[in-house]
Image (cartoon, rainbow over all chains, first blue to last red):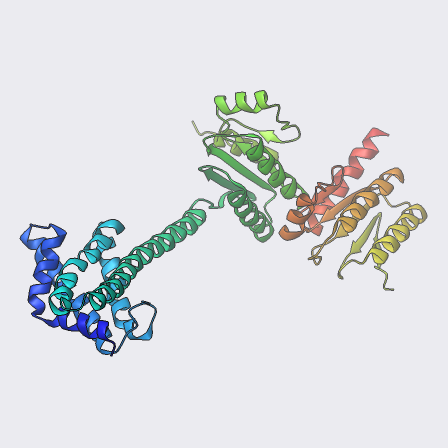
Length: 281
Length: 124
């Protein structure tokens, strides 16, 4: 075991309770309930750190095999704190607060040898910094995974294909249309047309906040693809503002049947396929 | 080189494309079809591409030109059973095949040809 490791281990071990108290004092938390839960976390980290030192973990790199347990404890800490709504900054500040009591311990032991003290402090600060950084990157990774999963869920949620009538399908589009989403809508709609052999598809854009040239182009592509498959398409739910925008932008929707509401589109679909709705009495 | 068979059903010529189209096959089909339409005086051409899974721009253009040739020879062309992936590819290639009639399946394609023929006979 190197001298720094030994010094660090003994300054951590010299009255473990004392180090943890000094650590928590350093975080500036006064609430006793919060402090109790932090004590549990601090003890776990101190234990993992001590075990890592005993296993001769390399102080220069947290990725060293000896720190496996410490990394695991830090991951758990990061995710449990994130679940409690604490920021990544809070968590890393908590880890960084460990420096002060450790430095104090090192100073007591190595006061006679300033060069060794300097080395030990440098090695410790490198390790603690890496530990703090590790909690932040774990936190960020967890967040990114969450965002990715939510995006995928949103994509699936936002593209239902509904059978309105025998041979009539409808897709209510909700939210901003980008290339990615239009592609998925196009694929699911075309597949449903092929599966159900529906002769008519209604694309309802009531829930689309804005229509620009790109969105219009996506819609035109979808309509062309539907036509190629041998089915027909009606676009419904065009709000007055959107109608104005389409005309102002000079987008050519000729050859595409458009209706103001989904009800209008359905009634057109029914009359085209020969259905007649009558009201009794 | 394999040739795609052209079947005659009354006044309709039926072409079922079961293999991936090579450029040569497509050219041969175009020629055969033009001759057959002229010889039989068919009023409709039905091209079933439900088994076709891969298209390129050449095949896309071939479909459009067959339709054009048939129109000149006074026959209506209907392309039936296009797969979703094929439709998306053609649109991405910028080939929306304006002027080519399409139907979901052979049955509806035949209905469409029937209607087109009746419409044409009314005109005369």
